Length: 115
Length: 112
Image (cartoon, rainbow over all chains, first blue to last red):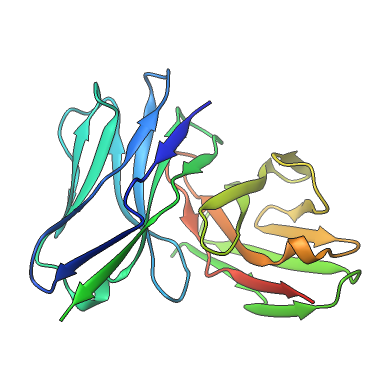
């Protein structure tokens, strides 16, 4: 069974600084997708970034980027120039293959931005 | 545009009462639809998913059921709520039947 582990329950960063959130996963599949979702106090889950396992290039979305290490089964999220609005719970998620496969979530990391 | 709606936003129900949560989507046809539950301080757990009208798959046997009476409507129900049904319920969809799920705003359910 696939598992996703986020070993940092809480992280904090100074505004405008850079922070990296860690995620590891376990799978025997070769075709899968990895995601980072953000859950602000409103509790809506918002997609931050997506990585296809078959792509070697790390995904980037504005201030958000990932470090995808397939052999190590590691998928960390880097947030550059942290802003107050980045404060939220961040969940790493895994999905096998294509179609109607479910998302498997980690337990989340609570990110605090220090003004 | 593609959007997903959930209602109600919050709900407080007594133990033993019925439940009906609704999720509707706009902007695409025949999407995959999902119901997740998030207990306090925890990640999300998949409850049900649907690939089409009347087609429901259950991930976790429990006090809940789901139905998809229309292509863009997904309903989560219970005949008798338990205290353990309290939580935050999120509907998600995969509009392109691809690889990415997008979530609705959620329903906060408290069972007293």
